[in-house]
Image 1 (cartoon, rainbow, N blue to C red):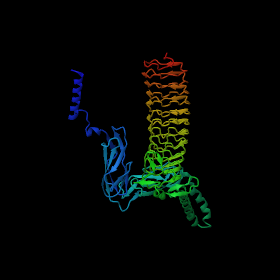
Image 2: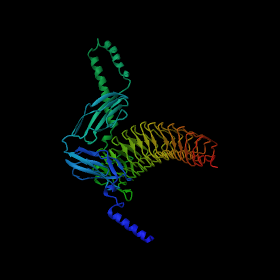
Image 3: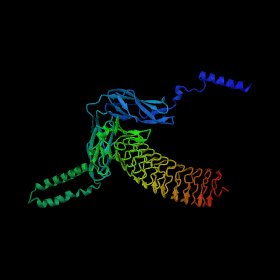
Image 4: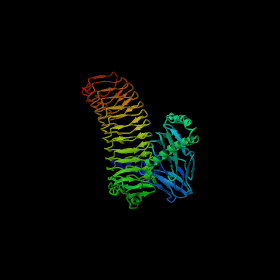
Length: 579
């Protein structure tokens, strides 16, 4: 049979297969192989309330971005980030659609009840007295006109008492302050809990009654028996409660500062918030704040006007992505919202100070990326995740106090923070992402808590001044390029749980002179100790079964290798075994 006839038969066969549907033509069901999983599929709200639709995961799609839409905007609207605002009685379906495949969708069913005549939070108790170091839990007695009893709590003076988002108070120092309890679904519903913190050693106060009786008997017979008992109790209570409450409100006047734009030098109000909104400098859409950012030109038309310190009111839900990006004259800002888009303050290279409020639980990717003059950041204790590249290339940032509830720092979060010289990682952290501290060239020491089980590749790459690091005891692998070019590192204790030393983990660590490889290590990947020119002797456990190419290549002073194992891989121990 000729080649031409064979080719003709093949073409005809393929044609019939396509027509019959047997040939690989994906059906609609096959095309939509992805899946969007929501943390919650339905909710019931009162009109005037809000909630946030959260995507738990996007399966089988490389692009995980989604968009939101409402089928009944008169009942409920939804922002580009999934913040739902209930408008009037009725039902609505919020559709979450994959940007990569429009056929992949998830639905969130919302029922909206009529707006209640009154909303009110009632606490079981409205005050408490505790000692420094003691805790007290605020309890919600009633949530009138609210769909949920969930609250967000904040302390007006954290030097006296701190509080978790759900209301657990901890006494810090002597004094009194207010705890503001705000509904998680309606910011208009608030309550105030008063807390008094006394010294831990109560014996300091009790001697006073003993002194009073000694003086009283001598004065009482001749002067006034009635005067002494009356004056002593009256004076004491009046002094204590009156002086402290009077000073406390003056210390925390933040809530009284009028929202708007202030002069960075004189601190005088230049433009009121209402005027910024009226003239279009600030845009508001369903509780979401944005400015005049242009995606195509990467410019912000609001940047010339936003010159100085910006005080944002607390009655908004979110910042849109790139909300204040490239506002190059903005010097200081507060962040009072609950949710944030990506790259909110990206490229604000005059921004020096930022305060993240108690409502925020996650700093979204790129929040302060390329804010090259950012020096001070206040992050409230409720933040659990610092997203990817949040402080990337913040070259003026020297120190950061991380919140105690922080669990994860995502990739490149502090990459390029060349002035960052110290950082304390919270004791309950579990994950450090890829290149988190890459090129933090001023960082000298760091302790990674034992709760951390995963450290990403290149996490400490190019930390050229790093001399001391403590690794967690549960770590099972040193990721690739983990300490690459940490030229000041002279020694390191590798945890006894580590079984794999990743590729280029210590490559070009020219100052490294001594290292002990744990007996449980079985794999040393390629170029793991490439050009560690200071190492003179090393012992490799006999249990190591795999040693990658060039593992010790360039180790000029390496004269003795102790190893009796059977690992293969040439020339893994250059220069000794390469020739």
